[in-house]
Image 1 (tube, rainbow, N blue to C red):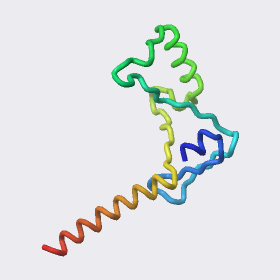
Image 2: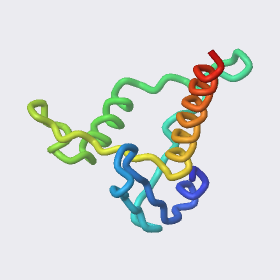
Image 3: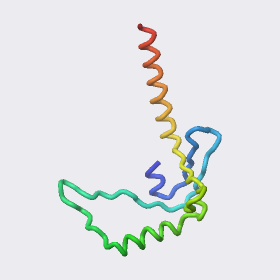
Image 4: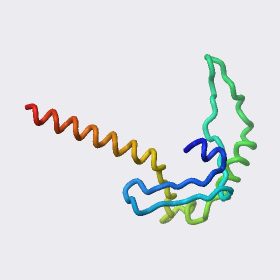
Length: 109
């Protein structure tokens, strides 16, 4: 899914707990940016610290892009996060595998 997001392709996310709830992002309707960058590689610092004013400007611009319902202090609207189909399937397969192992152990006792 990461490559689909980086290419700006259409993606569908699903609610982790309710299979009937999905969110679709059509190609061209969203933007993405890498949030994590290497800070140290092979023991050497790769990023130099940015000045405080530059960091402040960055954070305020990101905050301004959020809905006021998400940034209010009292009774904020929670930011919805869904997972991809492949992550959902992986999670369920791991849970089912563990449940099977536990059942097999209990059956052998």
